[in-house]
Amino acid sequence: MIRNAITRFPPTGFSANFAAQQRFAFGESESLAPRRYRSAWISDAHLGTRGCNAAALLDFLRANDFETLYIVGDLIDIWSLRRGIYWPQQHNDVVQKILRKARKGTHVIYIPGNHDELVTDFCGAYGNIEIKQRAIHVTACGERILIIHGHELDTVVQNVRWLAFAGDLGYQFLLSLNPLINFVRRRFGLGYWSLSAYAKRRVKDAVSFIGKFEAAVAYYAKRYGVDAVLCGHIHSAAIREFGNVTYYNCGDWVESCTALVEGNDGILSLVNYHPFSAVHPAENPRLDRNDEIRMTNVELNVTRS
Image (cartoon, rainbow, N blue to C red; front, top):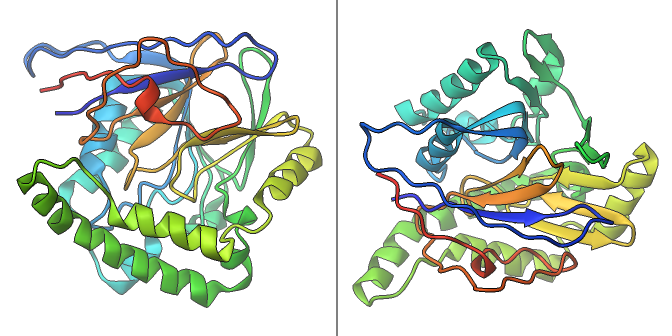
């Protein structure tokens, strides 16, 4: 059961028209034509770790096609693979699906993150696949967006690498506790709750994990002459505004299972493929782009076989 939600967000200067769309599947024998988007952004799949939700990512990749697909870092978790090999078939299927899309014409732009930084040594073009340290995307309505992984804005990763590695170990441990915690919660009729996500938010608030983030986003936007900055890294899907600069975060495929997509109208949308998402849509959703995205406002329950 995969539930899909689409939230529409207009760029600065456009009227706030929100639309939610449903997608139905009536069995595996009835295949639906993939939905076509102008562009899409995914980040932080962390293939090679037990926390990776490869099934949800495969569902997203199978259900949608794109002219351009941005992989915004940490597709493969090399940090984790150095500690021990974990590579199930579904993780291989994700890589093969991305390669297949590239062969069929999708322009894939891979921007390495901190967990797959070794890929930076191979920057260049390989057919329809490009590996770049950063990119600038121009939407159909003319918004210029700087695409980076986001560790460039992270003072811990940049300046205290041993603490970043220690934090990653702790995060993986908390992820391993999530199944047990939610098994107990289900026995009491409670919904899904992530200990790792909760702890990560609290720790980041306590130690100012990403430093002067607003100032850093504005600085990068000014440096590259763009209207917006899009990244991943912190596993928290959001659309916010810092002054005249829009900040997009496409989330991850460990906790939130979210991506950003762009339609032919140039509007960026958040899609949610989390298997435990079970929130009913609000009748009149109203979202403030200065707040973090709350998927509960506009989610639709869609059953997939």
